[in-house]
Image (cartoon, rainbow, N blue to C red; front, side, top):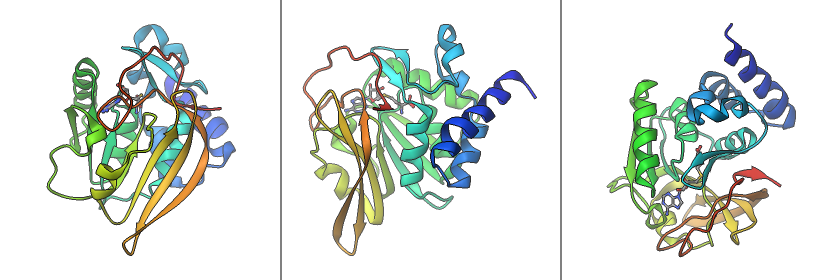
Length: 226
Ligand code: SAH
């Protein structure tokens, strides 16, 4: 077994499974995806640590536990189409791609979108489409509804564009709050109603855009639990 695989399995056992993530498919996806390929070369030592990592452009790859928790919330299988808002490094995108039929992911910073597209292509993910744009407006020019939507940046809570794009019984997971701290929320569309659950407190970089926040002050370490 190579060194990274040992570290990855340790990460899953000690940081993810030990902290209550029970969905076997999610745990297996985390064991497969080479997280060290998604962090900058100089931060490779942090790839399997219990923390978010800076990926440039003032953005972060989320803490592994948060990736696992948000993914588990969506209850995915190979028939589902997922919209992700905030591609960042593309790591969360890869985890989603392991578990569902197709992932559309939107990133507002072009350099990150281009790098993630290239990285995911190199790793042979063929069920992923990366778009550059404002994901707060919703989805990826898709004529179809999404079975699940994940927002990986902090939203002020204006979700109308996203709720419209959610299929019946669809799930939306999103951190909502102010710029400094948020609550991770899970919304489920059920018989025309929207059910809302609070999952945990968290801290993400802000969602910048028309239905997000107006601009981006520097925020170094986000995308983790408090
Ligand atoms: N899921 C990512 C975490 C990225 S951090 C990963 O695994 O690496 C959140 C990302 O959301 C940042 O890259 C940021 O640029 C992006 N973002 C912020 N506002 C956005 C918006 N309105 N539309 C799309 N992406 C946005």
